[in-house]
Amino acid sequence: MTALKCVKCSATYSEYPLIYKCPKCGNLLEYVYDFEKLRKTRLRGKLSFWRYKPLMPKVSKTVSFGEGGTPLHKAGRLAEKLGVKSLFLKDETRNPTQSYRDRSAALLVSNALDLNSETLICATQGNMGASLAAYSAKCGLTCHVIVPKMVDMGKLAQMLIYDAVIEEYGELIDEAVTRAETLAEETGWYQATPELNPLVIEAQKTIAYEVVEQLGVPDWLIVSMGSGATAYSVWKGFRELREMGKIEHVPRIVGVQSTGCAPIINAYTGRKSKRKSREKPFTHALAILVEKPLYCELALQAIRDSNGTAVAVSDSEIFTAEQEIARLEGIFAEPSSSATIAALKKLTNKNAIHDDEKVVCLITGSGLKATDVLQTLTKKRKTAGLGLELSTKEKILRIISRRETYGYAIWKKLGKTMTRGAVYQHLNELERKGLITAHEKEGKKFFRLTQRGERVLSAIDELKILL
Image (cartoon, rainbow, N blue to C red; front, side):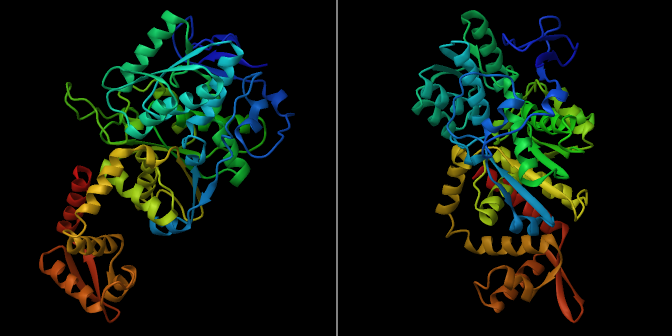
């Protein structure tokens, strides 16, 4: 038996007709199952989203573009750089519209067809709107999307080409969600806003199912948080597999947010935001720019019950991670996804992750959708000639920042693209300016970063965000 249950007052309701909030207390609803019955379920077909149809609420008409079944890449080069022995990237950019939201769109549009709905409405920061617009177009449904003032242009372009009806409302997604809720009540349109429709959690939990089939249970799973729903949904997937007797334990969930907008992190640590009361939160990772996350408490539950943690990272750390994922693993991740690697770097620096532990980072969407990052890269390319010497010195500083080292090793790390004499000339200049210091060890001259050098690298990171 499948039913809807209130996450707060535990009131239960039938699986369908679909309702979006508890009529008694107004809180969120989630699907619950008879796990004894599900224990006997056999999955059929290749690894894909609809392989898990028996483990989700029933739908009769299934719509598919071939979503799910995404690769789990072993990120060897990135792991070596970060000091992790076993790192995997769950690459959701390989979905039809290049994000994990295609899973949700497939299930929601299928349900909308079952209900004979002709119009869907969705408040979105981009990926969900793009996915729903594509799947609605395939079925001849109208997709009405409410977007906040700040939205990635690449995602907006997808919505436009799929012929969605687009309405701009509010500065942040929180306001757009309120608008979508009001319009759905007034018009009777199908509510496809991910923060409101409990089917979204059911769709996204299949990521956990796939990870277990591809790898087994990792020790850590790192996921970025906006509303908190994604962190909760993957944890729910692992938890249900444990209830079905498929696995013995769940991974430790790490929730990640930007320091510019970290309400769930603040709730986790008990700290208050440092922003002034009239100051709006901001991060270039627009997919996780949420001021009042509706799934905050459930995301915290996932983190705490799994013995996980929550990490805040700066936009400069996110941007650096985005470049590293692309350069070392050939995956172009959007900023919000790249935050998972930035968080992993912080955890490894604190020795929170042991050498023998397996880590999975969720890459939710493609960087091709985040055109502000593309513009930054274009500007960097135009000024590359002017900054060549600075770039070399920066590379040397970053090599030394990871661990103290010597000249020949630095030359090899740079790819032997210049003479060793030129490397030592840069080292002498950096030492003279007080950015590095040297000492003798094992008959070699070793270099380490000074506090001034650390401040310079930090300033360069901040400057990159502004370019």
